[in-house]
Length: 371
Image 1 (spheres, helix red, strand yellow):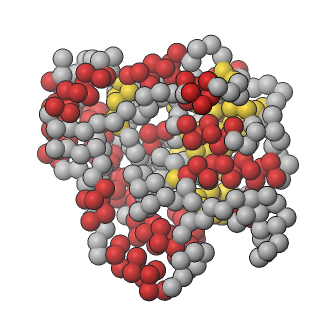
Image 2 (cartoon, one colour):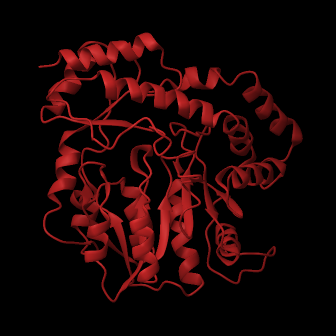
Image 3 (cartoon, one colour):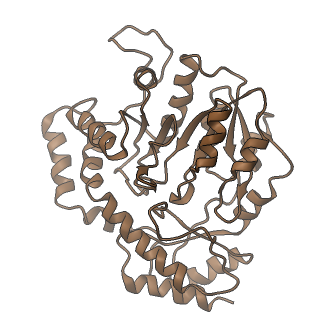
């Protein structure tokens, strides 16, 4: 059996340091907003290359808090439009609509499956105030062209970095490229906790202070609440776990790239398409290795019958989800046919730092033998 992601094996690979870190927290008697959280925030700040990291409860909260903070600071108001890729996980869209902002969905470039810069520019209106890019599947979505568009139109550039910890654009990491970035530490991520966790990174002092206030019920000082906030904290146990795992993140990402390089070079089935801009370079950390196949469901069953687990990211795109069908709060042109094609054909092959070379070979041979 080739598991899609063997979390038990990954956790075991960090022992005994991981258990020592958890024991350290348990023995300390301090479980929230303590030394582990401040330690992780400092270490992650240095790693990403920004001025601030603010830990929070999960990736969705990280996204939501960024928009909450910009509204509180007066940079955004209800009804403002945020351009966002249609090809993404629903959390990206929820963070926008939950803040009373309008998600404007645009099509991807099929060769990268990332947001298409030309579709960004053509979707800008007098109500547009921000662009959210998503480093989907672990591939950097940022381009100089997107940055130029945002600068010329005076738009906030926000990164959803939930799937791309450690990814690079030149000599800078994703999470440091825009005005602010959201990170998820869900257990299955490249940098995963042993439960939920998230963070916001930014170079904006005012934004960081506001995010920290809003994540603490809206309070900077105990029992004083200048803003209406939420309760969203990265607990000490998860912070301690992340401090251990952060030390090995680049090495683990290199292993992912090695596996991806074999897939790219050795999968030669003409009915299984690998996006041409996937490459085993620093601009991709391969949280997910996506392929496209018109016979996607048959391919998934074929691999499953041979003991190879795969997943679909994602079977239903956000604009076709029932929650958004009931509410007229999304904007997009046409029928988002490219996004729907991706969601109808995408299949994610196993890729993780604990896969063996033999398991990789098994996946390649099975994919190549599918007809």
